[in-house]
Image (cartoon, rainbow, N blue to C red):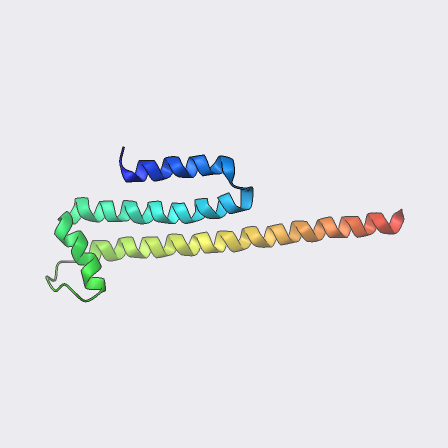
Length: 115
């Protein structure tokens, strides 16, 4: 069992202990971590450990081996797009929740007015 499996098991155990909104936030953040871990594993498998490390070093301008970064750039773009879609979906979800709360308040006001 590697550390990723242990973390996944820990997250599942947390579900039993945390209230719903807190757990949803933990799960959102965990999905980002999982995606980044899978991206790093892909880098290591695809380019070898030095080149995967090199990707990190080049982002810090510490490595100058000059290997092709086209594939990694595409993966980075996919990661950014996924993050953007998640942000849009979260904002849509929040808007729907606000709308539902507003409808519930309106129902209560109408009910109070007619009783």
